[in-house]
Amino acid sequence: MPPLHVFRALLVSALLVLPLHATAHATDEHFRPYVPQHGRARPVVAVVGQNAGTELTDFVIPYAVLQRSGAVDAFAVATLPGSMTMRPALRLQPELDIKAFDKRFPKGADYVVVPAVVKRDDADLLRWLRAQYAKGATLVSICDGALVVANSGLLKGHRATAHWATEGLRRKSYPDTTWVPNTRYVVDGRLVSSAGISAAIPTSLALLESIAGRERAAQVGAQFGVTTWTAAHDSDVFHPHPGNLGALLRINVTNRWFHRVTRLGMALQPGIDDVTLALTADAYSRTGRSMVYGVSPLPQIRSASGLMWLPDNSQLASTQEPIEPITATRDAPVFDAVLASLDRRYGRSTARGVAIDFEYP
Image 1: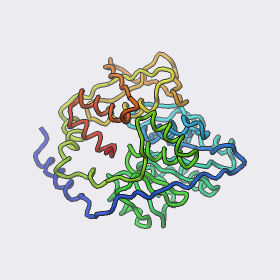
Image 2: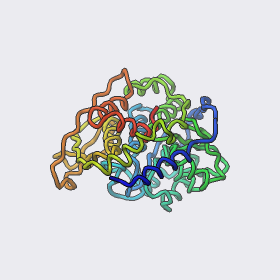
Image 3: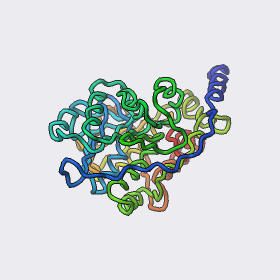
Image 4: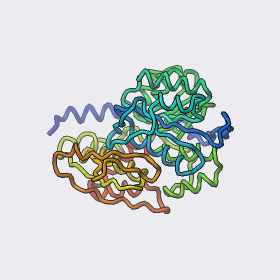
């Protein structure tokens, strides 16, 4: 049993970080319409991650949304050659590293999507982002990918947003940036940023709309049960407060201290839906009760959107339990199905804690 003072400290710290502002929810953020450049028939999009650790959902959803649209040429890019470890789970093989991308596209990308990464001050990544921006690319950060862009110096004097949990850190560490709360995404010229993890879908659809029109964005959004992607959002409700503290303690303390972590095997099959895969593996690996591993008899598996996934078979020293299939419908967002699955397996409090971590309304 953890000492009482630990819980008391968590409660006090939670109350101290309650937001003191009352900002209207932003609804008027609009991406600039895509203007063809470099003689390309359609835009080139680089979704860039760091080999040592890149947030799973932040990376996969923008890639999948844009690639499935058929309106862009999207590339999975890493800082270095070799596989990329995703956080908190799974591994994939990028198509290009940044040097190979530069050789193939010396004029740069039209858009660069920047997920949260483990090493926010990676010198090679920061240098590459500055170079891409100088060549005319629009940078789109997802969640705490904004801290990577901030470390590059490009956000000075601009508006931006990121995950609710880093609000205090961002305001202290990057005072030259205007950090906007209560919005799904912020568009400041060629610098775009989004709120927490679940903002990846609406941000990606808003970007797609600016490239290929609303009808195409709606067609892709329907695949995930999403019908609207405005910037309207209330990030304040996710900060710790008496109403949600129990759920946050559940996934961050109770589950981790009082339960064995279960290894869950997720079957990787050719053509697997990578959005459902990413959301499921990410969510289950944040519960404090389980960790998801990709399992396949094949050495690599190409998903529905073209990403190349690498199984974790060699890391499974003990028998893993199967994870229940997640079936998404066009009538509801796919993440609702994931949360319902968590509710059935671990209970309502754990599912709610994960939803808060994802900044999911």
